[in-house]
Amino acid sequence: MTKMKRLIQAAGVRSVEEARMLAGCGMTHIGLPLRLPVHKEDVSEEEARTICEAVNHAGAQSVLITYLTDPAET
Image (cartoon, rainbow, N blue to C red; front, side, top):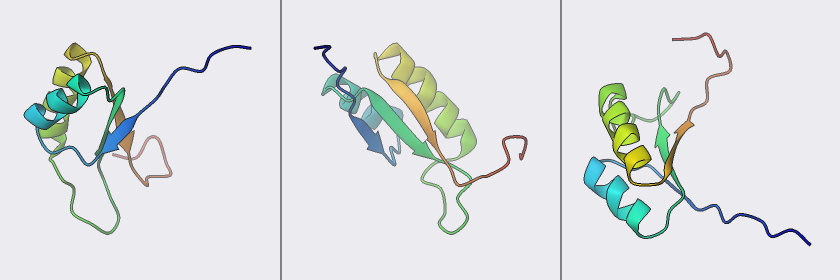
């Protein structure tokens, strides 16, 4: 029997400090909602970029949460 890797994601992270804290607590993935059709995003795209860079250095991975259907859409 193979052992499955544990994945834990937190979504809606709003700051580098929060992302680092979550990664330090064992979160493996940090979700950042962007380009939402209904609600305002929690962070700007620039803030999301900064959070992604910090998360990757803290040992977790960043995950985009979006409702876009066209990958080429900007």
